[in-house]
Amino acid sequence: LRPKPLAGKRVLITCGATREYIDGVRFLSNSSSGRMGFALARVFRWYGAQVKVVAGFTTAQEPPETHVQRVVSAQDMYQKVMELKDWADIIVMNAAVSDYMPERKETGKIKKTQSLTLRLVSTPDILLHLGERKGDKLLIGFALEERENLLENSRQKLRRKNLDMLIANPLEVMDRDFHEGYILYADGREEKIEFGDKVISAELIVKKVINGLLSKSL
Ligand code: C5P
Image 1 (cartoon, helix red, strand yellow):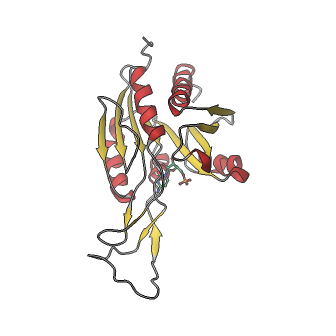
Image 2 (image 1 turned 90 degrees about the horizontal axis):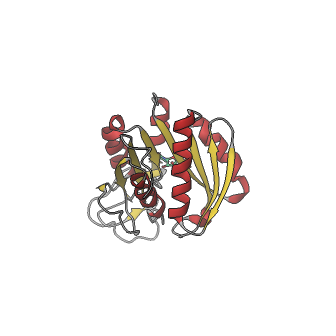
């Protein structure tokens, strides 16, 4: 049995892929499975935290006895997170939120023609919004980047979104069991991580959160 240093702490976790519908049956999305977010939900509970999950589309198995609220689009996820943010002490944005959505959604099914131009507009950046009004919450983000500029781009994101911690991952971890990348902290520390299983990785991340809370260094 593990100790419960997170008893009384409330953790909101987002995970999975959002879907941006083009018409009644087609959408833009990505191959996020929800593995990492669901693993984090399990592990945060092992250490005593109360957990709520806001999930887009996932293929991974849901964690047991955990409140999972389903959403479809980035807009829906934004609204649900705004509803729950004041409840949470710690927010982990693990979801692969679509960066774009169709400017308008057609009804029914778009007819086949020679070519079709879709106009996309930006979705709200949920994490950026949270970072601008952070208060004393702990904010943790994930970044999926090409290996070449993984660290450089992730450092910028950590700062721009005002995060306490950012887990920087190469593209290869998406929809896979293994997990590798870096944990970046607001104070400039960086740690390399590499595990064959996302639950093991999630446990390391949760332990870092616990250490940070205890030493007030996050
Ligand atoms: O900027 P980028 O999308 O790479 O940042 C990734 C982080 O921001 C993730 O934690 C993701 O959940 C979050 N995000 C968000 N809202 C968006 C896009 C990304 O909260 N529209």
